[in-house]
Amino acid sequence: MANTLSTYTLRDKYFKSSLETALRNALVAEAICRVDRSDLKRIQNPYITKQTAAIQAVAGTYSVSAMTTTDDALTVSEEVIFGTHVFDFESVTSNFNLAADFLDDLANSVMEKTDVYVLNKLLDDAGSSYTAPAGGFTTAANIPVIFSNLISKVGGYSSGTANEMFVVIENTDLVGLTQAQVASGFNYADMALKNGFVGGYAGVQIYVVRTGTFQTATIGTLTATNVSHRMFGIKKVATWASPRGMRYEEKGVTGKTGKEVVAYMYTGALLWTPKANLFVDIDVSA
Amino acid sequence: MTKTKEEEVVSEEVVVEPTNKEQKARWTAFLDRYQAQNPVKFAVKKANGEFDKIPDSFIG
Image (cartoon, rainbow over all chains, first blue to last red; front, side, top):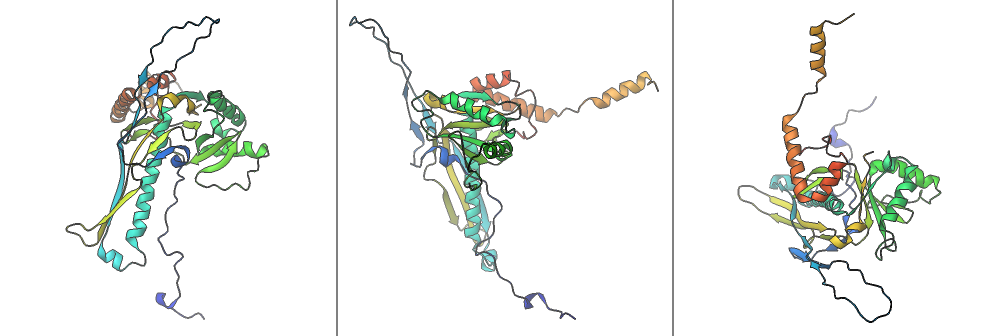
């Protein structure tokens, strides 16, 4: 016959020294953008309108053309912010450092939202477009067709296929892609899903974000119409500005014990106008 | 069994989908903002019929 033991008679241990967190999304903006963390409101990048040289029989004469320059600027327009309050009675009696653990989670939430903004902003800036065959990335037979079409969109430029190409897809797209990779004999089995990077296909680096990342919604000051769209491009062509990166504050406030904690980030992103055609807006709605 | 004229009218009324005026107004305002923000892409997406149906995930 078993003994009757009270709750505190039995031995417990804590799995971790910090609070466990909910599943976190992969962050890919930093991997595909040139990141600027200088504390500036705007980054100016005026450009020369493309000119075409003349070719002629040797004569030594020429006509003089006027050059045109156009302003282009990235403005840090968004603030992503999230805060909470940890009362003293909560932190005093907790087994965990609540302020630190909550702040870590707030910061991650801010970063996830920033990632969504950057991806949707750059996709809206994309100058090329491509409509995928019915089934999109979820149909294995489409994969070589899609990738070959995407690569052809950026081929021939001096900053085209010679540099690092990437595609950002949602996790639901992996169905067809994984089948295609396995069927093609790619060494895929050992590839870890790390920071959304799941290897490559035809020289294109593949980043995976969660379904719902590409949105038709208002995201800060951005009006995005990107549901059923995906993004292809060349790495380090677009710029993501995040002055001083992730910021946080921990402060006492009037009328409450304990500390208020807040994580925030200023952000802006731009695909520079002359380079817009190096990004492809992929329509997978069919 | 043949339906009376009155029964047919009733069934037609049931088939008509309820319209969410508030959501449609939000969608229209949203598209107006997008047109102002990116008129080139707005025209392309509109021509492709992308704005004919309000996405299920749209909350405005």
